[in-house]
Length: 548
Image 1: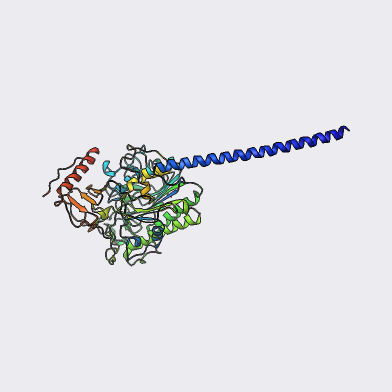
Image 2 (image 1 turned 180 degrees about the horizontal axis):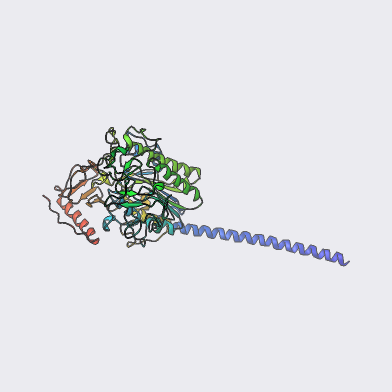
C-alpha cells in the first residue's frame, strides 16, 4: 500500500516538475525575445548615432591602404593611359569609386606622408622636407596618428614597405642595436619597413626595432657627409654598375646600383632590388592570413614607381615603356596579388581598399634606366602640368580609388579631396575622438570618400619642393610667388616657380597654361591674404605681393 502511494506521489511530482519546466521554457522564450528586441533597439540607436556623425554603416571595415611611390595621374589605364594597361587596378576602379580631383599635400614624399599620418600639413613643422636615410623620427610620439586612430579602435595595425619619416632620436637610427622610436611608437602593432628610399643607404629592411638578418659581427656604418670604409662607389667604380646614374646617386654601390650616401657592413641584411615587390607582397599576405578574424589596418607602402627601377624578371622589358613602365606593371601585379588574398580569405566584402600615391610622377630622377628614351608618347601626369617636385597640379593631384562593396558608391567623383583628411574621416568611421589640436588640418570627409556626397573640401593647400604653397578653392588655384628655376635641370620638370603670383581657373584650364593673375588682381589679393593668415598661424612670414 505504501509503495503504491509513493509511486502516485512520484507521478504527481514529475507532472508538477514538467509544468515548471514548460513554464521556464516560456519564460526563457520571453526573456530571449525581450533581449532580442532590446539589442535591435540599441543597434538602431547606434546606427543613428553613427549616421549623425557622418557614418553610413555600423559595420567597421578592415582598411587596406596601398600607397604607390611617384605614381602619376596619367599612369593608369583607368585614368586614361593608352600606352600601358593596369588591369588589376582598373578592376578595383570598376568596382569602387575613382576620384578625379584627389590630392597629396606635397609634391615630394616625406611631407605628403607626414601630412597623411598626422592630419597636419608638413610645412607647418620645420625639418619635414625630404628626409635623408639617417634622419631621426619626424613625428612626435605623443601626437595622434592615423594608425593610432585604428589601434585605439582595437584594430590590428601594420605597415609593410617604405617609411621615410625618420627613425630614432638625436643622431638618428642606431642600426646595430634597437631602432626606436619608429612606426611601433606611432600606432602600428607590427612594422616591416624600408627605412627611407631605395636609392638611399642603408639598403636593409627593418622589422620591428631591428635590422632584419643583421650579423652582429658585421656592423653597419652609414654616413651622408663623407666617404667611409672601402665599399666601391659609383664615382670611383663605374665598371661595377648595372645601372648608371644620371645625376647624383653615385655613392656606395649595392647590388650593382650606386646610391645616395655611404655605407659599409650588414652584408647579410642587404636587400635585392629585383625582389622587393615580392617581399612586400608576401609580408602583406602573411599579415592578412594572420588577421583574417580580426579587424585590421594594413598600410602597404610600395617602392614602385620610385628610382632605382629594377623590376623583377617577370616584368623587365614587358611594358614597352622602359623600366618605369615595367615597374608600373609590377605595382599593378602587387595590387592584384594582395586582392586575390582578400578574396581567398573571404575578406573582400568587409575591407575598404584604398589605392593612391604620395606625389606626382618623374621620369628621369637620377638613373639612366631607359625610361626617358622609351616613354613612347606616354604622359605620366596626363593632362596636368608639372610633376614630382612641382607647384603645378602634376605634383600633387594623384590617383585615388576606394572600394568597399555595397557601401562605397561605384563610379566617378570629381569632389576635391586631400589625403590629410584620412585621419579625421577614419576617426569618425571607427568612433574615435580627435580635435583640432591633434590634427589641425584634417577634416571629416567620410561621406565624400564613401561616395555619399560630392561636396568639395573648402580649401586644399599644396606644397612644392622649395616650399612654395598653393591654394585651391572651387575651380580656382593660386600659387604664391616663389624663387628658384622655372624648370629642373636634372628632371626636366616645370617646377612652377615664378617671382609673380599665379592664378588659374582649373575648370577651364586643367593644364594651368593661362595665368589669370593680372586679369583678376582682387582674387590674387584675396588669396594672398588667406594664405598669409594661414602661414602666420604657423609662424611663417608672408612676403608682400606685387603684380608687375
